[in-house]
Amino acid sequence: MTDLDPPLHRYLTDLVAAARDVLGDDLVGAYAAGSVGLGAYQPGRSDVDVALVCADALDPGRRRELVARLRHEALPCPARGLELVVYRREVARSGTPEPGFEVELNTGARMPFRATWAAADRPVEDGLFWYGLDRSILHQSGLALLGPPAAEAFADLSPADLRRLLADALRWWLALPTPPGDGPAPGAEDAVLGACRSLVRVRHGVWLSKVDAGRRLVADGRPAAPTAAGRPADATADGGPDGGAMGATADGGAVGAAGDGGAVDVIERSIAARAGGPPPGGPEARAFQRRVLDEISR
Image (tube, one colour):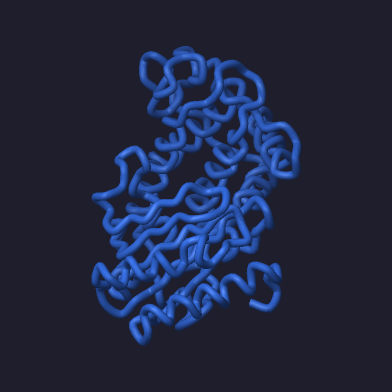
């Protein structure tokens, strides 16, 4: 961990110590995931994603104590916020696509607090695909803070489960509301670059950071395959879940705007937006996402 941002290094060290105080010998692993594991952590922008692995199921009292010790008010997070998930060892090693968590905690100065004790407690609209995908990333790139290497602690998904969860994630992104019109849409860069990461994982079998995935697709010269018959993947008659203005047209017009040249431009502007440039517009971001969804779903 010596090459980490110093405030982040101190925070992760303190987090593991607090978790050990609560869980004792039941804590058998702690891993940094997400942007930290993929070497793309940006102070001030990134979340801190951490997975803890426990030997056995946690009783309600220990779950509540763990949340009390790790929430931002008790252990201030130096990033936008902490996204922490606790798994039993057998779940982490199983390769299941199911959530399977013991505790989920979101907390931070710029993140709404939420503690969740079971997948059934999550709002349906928040999706359940995150956990299997996160464990797949951990299998490849998790940074061990405690315990065995992440590749031993976490099993990867099967190819079929991977594609299904990636498609679920893209449909979730496509269902999010975005501003009307063609102007820059805040957050569209994350939607585009998240789709890039999914497509690189399917094509090349590797998880990259969102920005690196975008660069990989630009270098490939084949950002996303055209949708079948020029129609956007999973679009409804009224233009998809956003209902018209933000969706592709029935004759594929918005998809045409994200042809290979247009898709490269959308990706490059999304990368530039990470450094403060304007994000792409909602319609072009959605057109690109639909092309990716179509390829992943084949």
